[in-house]
Image 1: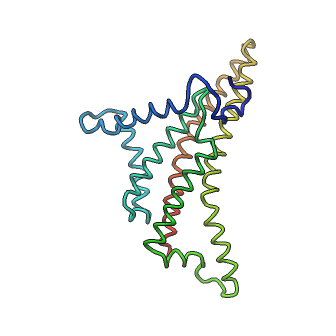
Image 2: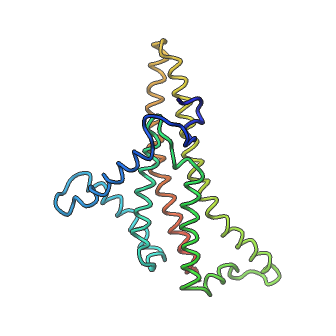
Image 3: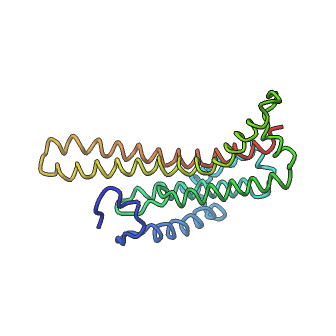
Length: 229
């Protein structure tokens, strides 16, 4: 039972629809729809091909394309985040993308992988990135510390951005749903509230797609910093 608007962020809520079951179902469905174009072309496979093409084109323009498997890994992350963001909009379903633990694990994994790959392939450029070009010599120690701190906090800001944007939308949807349920016996108020609820749900649908793209895009931009000099 959902006790308040923040209950959707509690993964210990035992409801009929569980996010794990939905994600497993969508994962198997995604596997078959991704490979169905090998023997049968359909509209669903076309949609996923476009989705992969968008993020893979972005990866090919970045320095991360020099890493083996970077494009396919990031396109998989993009599709997975879309499923998590949109799946969390189903009523009484735990929104895992709104949970800071998931977003922080994803951001730390990809950020750490980029740092390790950069130190392995271009160690001099990685170290040179800590010192801005053309900076006065007496500011070099201070600027190096600032650049190091800004690099370290990247996974944290990336995780907070995803969790905060998705979490705020779910809270507003919960508030609108509460007000809508209190106006069930008022026909005029119900007519006024339903379009608002539907409109904001469509808005959150777009936010879920955009946040998945921004998360993947920022990782590609972080990979460009490995070859900035």
